[in-house]
Picture 1 (cartoon, helix red, strand yellow):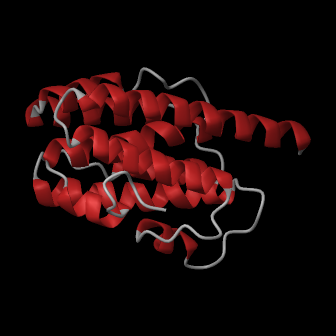
Picture 2: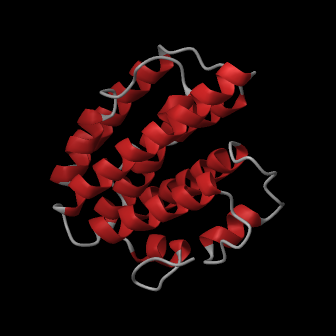
Picture 3: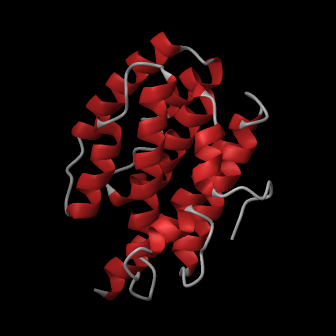
Length: 188
């Protein structure tokens, strides 16, 4: 599975600018928020606004405020701790190096978390293969998350106007994950 540009996820991350990297990491985090308790939909809105402006100073302030909001929510279970760690490791510096590392970790974490909620067991190395362009054997949640990550990076590569699409993909992905988590909780 590859993106519309024919490049795999690792290549898309490598080619992204600061705004694209910030959006990619933030979108992964946003889609995984349903793994935390509570309604946190607005907690990341100021961070998205900072990304839209490409404002490094506002980014650092918004990340700090979002950490406070997420820290107020109980993290129950390993998945919730991983989501909280995604934001905890968000760089406050708007630099290529810091954002690239964070976006890569968020990508890997989000794919792994989605893979855990697929019906089938995720084979060792599948997430890494998916990121490199080979999604053979990926379940529907993992494959969907991979497509969303690629679409976010493709969208934001076209400038600030692509952020709207990135945000829409995040909302859609969050709904999908929320439904799966809810369904699992009812059957447990």
